[in-house]
Amino acid sequence: MRMLITGVSGHLGGVTARRAAAAGWDVVGTYFSNPVAGGEALDVRDRDAVDGLVRKVKPDVVVHTAAGREDWPTIADGSAHVALAAARAGARLVHVSTEAVLSGRDVHYDESALPDPIYRYGAAKAAAETAVKAIDPAAAVVRTSLILGYGRGVHEKLTHDLIAGRAEGMLFTDQIRKPIHVDDLADALIELATNGHAGVLNVAGADPISRYDLGVLVAERDGLDPALIPHGPVPAGFTAPVDLRLIIDLAGRVLTTRLRGCREFLRSPAPGDR
Ligand SMILES: NC(=O)c1ccc[n+]([C@@H]2O[C@H](COP(=O)([O-])OP(=O)(O)OC[C@H]3O[C@@H](n4cnc5c(N)ncnc54)[C@H](OP(=O)(O)O)[C@@H]3O)[C@@H](O)[C@H]2O)c1
Image (tube, rainbow, N blue to C red; front, side, top):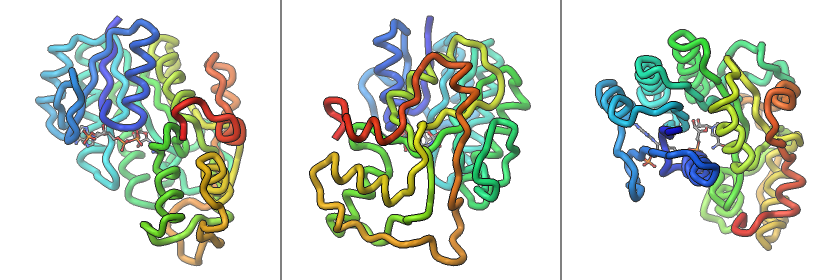
């Protein structure tokens, strides 16, 4: 069985490719600006290129992890191009979305929550979800939270940079998320490649935690001094969700992959996780 994964030069795509290959999949991966050995160059903004690659690869499953930051043509148009090409090829589609499609006003969200994004990245990802669901109602649309693991997560790098004085800003003591380990998310995507779940599925970690407390756990794991992390409450007028918790009860029924909480995976890190 062949799996086409977009964005294998990225954090999630790379780990998904490695774990899918280990599970016996014939994996073909794409990159955009950071070439990967054996990978296929692809710009998802180019509709014909996406269609041509999918026709050439003939995948059974397409796992779409590629995305840009606040980049509408890549996130919204690109996801539509991937969904159209997968549908034309009759391939199963597993699309990676985000909790950022939600505002956080309701705090706790199950899969029935409709997007109400409050910033540009979330809006583009919401548009992507809409396109994917319209083109292929059978596709799995995975909403996830902060992705950590192998020191490559955005939050892991930010924590290091804040402690080293390489970044400005702070970690908020009241901005709550349910972070997930990249291995768990990758395994969930691989499971969804064959389990037939249609529509939105929340795939996040088990523990709600503030971004500051998460930074403390990352610092402790990596032997850094947590006292050096600048921190404070979310300021007035902040334009990102504050307290946003994905309910993962359905994932517990649909998946066999166990979604660990961050306290578990940061306090007992796997080799190479730092
Ligand atoms: N990071 C998080 O905490 C988080 C949280 C929730 C949801 N997500 C979602 O999870 C997915 C993976 O995130 P990540 O952190 O692993 O991302 P990442 O490390 O930033 O990787 C992004 C990937 O997208 C590729 N890409 C960028 N522009 C492209 C284009 N125009 N055409 C084709 N490929 C392009 C990049 O290729 P090059 O590197 O070769 O340029 C890279 O492989 C994304 O869909 C993201 O929205 C992430």
